Length: 625
Image 1 (tube, one colour):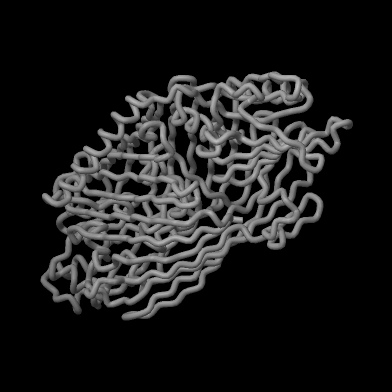
Image 2 (cartoon, rainbow, N blue to C red):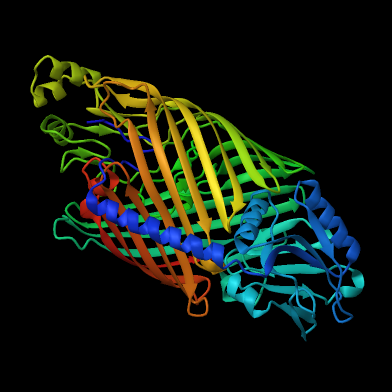
């Protein structure tokens, strides 16, 4: 009965895989293999390139291409193909399939370069575009094949063509707008909107180099439909504001805040309103580096959902695992250096002030300790433990001081990308330890009430142990898929001995996954297998081996106005099931209306088992401005 909630158990606590779970995972694996064969057999003849920019001035295009190439990405310039086309394009590629191009685009974004994927070769009118003049704007529209892929539109402002001051606006339905203004040397800046007539501009105040406004909004109703649940609804609201000030091309000031509302009706009722900061920092950009001081959200690693080397981040488990990984991370105080040189990136982070994971209120059904049932997430319950949890007290207070440091060196190559990391950091999620005084009293034969009375403070106290993390990750393209591998060795992994003593051991976390688009379609399939293994850990109550199969499937349909996606986690060594299908209407930008199901099932010491009565139906609205 491991008295624990570690960084890993917070995500995947799994044991014996029952026949039903095996059937589900087997079906998914078979379907994945079939889809993979389709992707191999239907490799599209058309290739794809990443367009980084388009310029009226060929010299500016050449300079921009050189800047990108200097950081290790082989950019080239493409001159106008016809007399009607006056633009010089900067591209990276081409690549044989969209999967590879998407992967490179993500790597570029990680290294602060932004582009979008388009088909290649471009058509006879040049670069696959049909141009038209509209109120002194040259609007280059992507052909249907590109609109089906990413729905991008390229707009070149020609109103000041005589001055040579061209502005390039790339609109991508999946990301914020990116503006590259040649007047400031091509420095890229992310903004929310470039259309002054857009109603969303009314939610943002701008004055010169300063702007502030609404960034994200969300409202969700959740109904716990199972009769065994004592709670009726679990609702959620979220507002985030963000602002920035760019007094100089080399300097950037960003500030953000968030307000989260948690509402629970039933037994017990719970209503909380929490204010927190977002990514708020001062940044200086040099020629091949940048320095950041403030608060930032950092996610390291290559694997989605369960990256083994993602130990430096601050977790958010205020809603369990209802949200994807990027929404289960919070900003934290950091001092950060990022250096770029010929495809290499060095990322060095120091956390001067440790902040524990964002946790739900103790009365919430998403808190990792259920005192009503007498269970702790990750614990195999027994009568003694149940009595201690029900009658005792819980403390999740965090220690003061720094949170540690981390280094990550990565390289983006033409055939394989890889990274290595060394970290010495505190675990942000709590590991609950039984008070030694209570343990000694129980060992001497005391009953539960007497043992708790003999305790020194809370019956269960949260521990946030420091540990060394040494690991790495790699990724490459093959058979029309992106293959990812990641592993980490950790020291001082918390465990509980059979005599209830708190202790630490070494452990290894690993993961392997593949992402592909079956038949080169717009359906994205991401599949992963993860493992957690304690090293030389006899006589412990914690599980020494944990294996998990997880992934996601996503598709857009209805002229890209609807989206269907499913996230899932399945235990391979113990029954543990979490499935989250969701359908959303995305044709009302920037808003999204969605309906989904979160289904939990499993053994009591797994996520699926601990939250088995918390399966819920959701209806919601979210926007990103």
